Image (tube, rainbow, N blue to C red; front, side, top):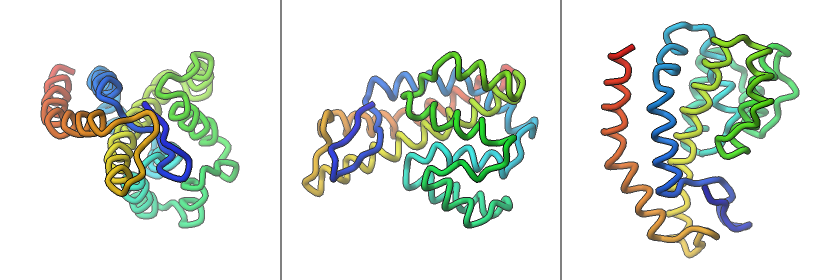
Length: 192
C-alpha cells in the first residue's frame, strides 16, 4: 500500500502485490465472514459502525453511512464515526471500533497483542466476526481509494510512491479478478 502526497489524496491504496495478498486474505477468511453474517452475533448497527470506523474510501463511507442510518445509528453518530471519533460510542462497542482503526492504520497487519485483547474482550467467535467485517471493508476501501488515486493522477496530481502503471494494473486486476474472487468465495462457502 502507498500513501499519497499532501494536498492530493492522502489515503492508502492498493498495489498489484498488495491486492493479491488482500484477495488471498479475503478468500482464506471468507468462511469467517459468511459465519459472521449468518450468526448475527454482531448487530447490523454494530457492523455498520465497524465499517464506518475503518473509514477509508468515499464510496464505502457513503454506502455504509446510508446503511448505518437505516439500521438505527443516528446521523450525529455517523458523522462522528466518519470523522474518526470513537469516544462517544457504547463501552461495549468501543474496543472493536478502536481495533478497526488500528487494523486499517497497521496496513492490515495488526499487532498480535491487539488481536489478543480483541479476543479477550469479545470471545473467540465474536472477535472473529469483527475481524471478518474489518477485512471486507478494508478490501473495499483500498479498492475505491486506488480508483480515486487514478482520478487524482488524471487531474495532474500524481500519487507519491505510485505510478500510472501500478494504478492501472491494480484496477485491471480488480476488474478481471473480482469475478474469480467471487467464484473462489462461492466455492469456499460451499465447502463449509
